[in-house]
Length: 130
Image (cartoon, rainbow, N blue to C red; front, side):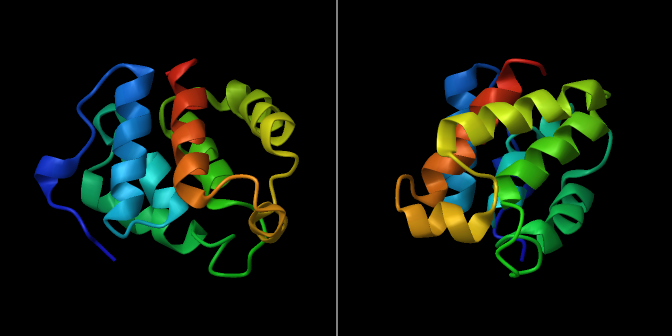
């Protein structure tokens, strides 16, 4: 799915702008992983189209299996693509601490936060290191 045009690629630099972009992308039809990755598309060494395609199968808990949350996968992708691999585990643990889990099915079952809030949080966590 490619619900956005080139003009929708992230351009904001503040954590709030990244959060807003991730929420908007999710609302436009991006899965959780795509929304997080595309909120940082301007920082990635690949084209926005490639970023969308790479992130596509990681939504809905990895190809719809409801396993690892797409937000977590998206954070890991952005870390890897921007040379911040060493920060990946720290971000994952911060996400887990805030939300109680990193597994899509359990996050959804808890009902604590809807997906748009989770993608915004993931974008905010990334802002601390990118």
